[in-house]
Image (cartoon, rainbow, N blue to C red):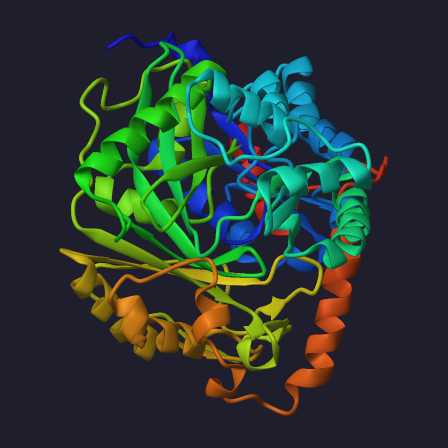
Length: 507
C-alpha cells in the first residue's frame, strides 16, 4: 500500500463543530495520536467536546453566525493555533465550498471532498445531471429550475400530480413541498421560493414527480485519490418527521442481494463521475416496486454513520483522515462486508406529544444504556444546560444485533434503560416506534408517522408549552439567519483549563 512521507501527516486538527460530532471526532484523533483542537461559543464553554479536546478556544457568542459560522474567525483561529487541518463534522461548514476553498488558500487541509466537488454536488440540479451522465435513474421532472409558475403548470400537465417542488440549493429537508392539485400550486410555488431564499440565499426551484409512500435509502461511500470508490452498504432512513430523519438502520429490510448490487454500483458510478474524495452519501428514494431513483449526494459524514461503523467495523472518521493525508483506504480492494444489523435512534430535545416542539433545559439526571451491542454518541452530562441556539440532537443511541429482530429488541431494551430528566425528549416515542407491528415487519415509508403516529400516544407535560414555544421561535430565528455569516475581528483566547495543552505544543 502506498504511503506518504511523515511530514505530510496531519498532526493538529481543528474541529469546526460542536456537540456529539465534535466529541466523536476527538475520540478518533486521540486514538490516532493527533492533537484535537476544539472551538466553542460562550454557551458551549462547558460542553463535553471542550472538556475532552487537547486544546479549546472561544469563538464568539451563542448565535452560530457570530461564532461557529463566522468563517473569517474560524480560519484566523486555525492559522493562529497552528492547525494543519480542519474537520467540519456535519452541518455548519461541512458542505460549504467557500470554506473548503478558504482552508486550501490558507494552507490548511480540509478533511472532506474538494471545493469543486462540494460546489458541483451542493446544487441539486448539477447533481442530477451527474447522475444522468453516470446512467443512474432520476425522478421524472424539470431538467432545470423553473422560471415561472406557468412553466411549473406545464410540467404538471406533462408528469401529473402529485408533484414535489424542491429548492435547487436545498438540504436537510428544507425547501420541499408536495403539491397534489392545481389549486395548491400557486401558493406552494410562492412558499417554496420564499423558504429557499430565506434558508439558502437561492430561490431557484425545480419540479419532480412525487413518489407515493417511498422509502428513503442511502449508500455510504468512501473514495481515495487512486480513484477507488467503496460501497459500504445501504442505510434505511425512512422514519422521518418534516423530512428529517429520526431512526436509521442498516441494511434496509426492503433490499435483496440483486437490488443491493445494482444500488451499490449506481452509487459508485455517481461518485466516480464527479471524482469524489473522502466519505459521502448518495441518497435515493425507493418506490413500492423496488425501483430506486437518485436524489442527491451529501458531501460529508452523515449523522447516521455509526450504524455503518457497527456492521463494518470501520472508523469512518479515521478513513477520512487517511484520505486527506493522501493515503489509500485502509482496506484496499478488500471492502469489508457488513455483518449483522444496526439501528440508530436520534435522541432529540423535543416533545412528540406537541408536534415535536423543540425543548431546552438543564440535564437534571441522565443514565445511558449499556450492555452488549450498545453504543452512545453524545455530549450531554448531568448538570449540562442544553443551549437554545443549536440543533436539538442530544444523543444517538446505536445498537447492533445478529439480525434485524435482535437489533430491534436490543433497541427496545436500551431505550427502557435510558434515563433522561430535564428537557423534553423523544425516548418514549422511539419505544413506541420500535414496538410497532409495522416497524417490526419492516413495512416503512417516509409517511410512516403520518400513517401510524398519534401524538396522544405520548403523554404531554403541561410545562412543555411555554418552553417549547420559546425554543421553537429561537430555532426558527437561527435557521433564517443560517446563511448569513457574521464578521467579528476580536482575537480568540484559549480556554483557561487548556493552557497546559498549549504549553506542550509550544503555542
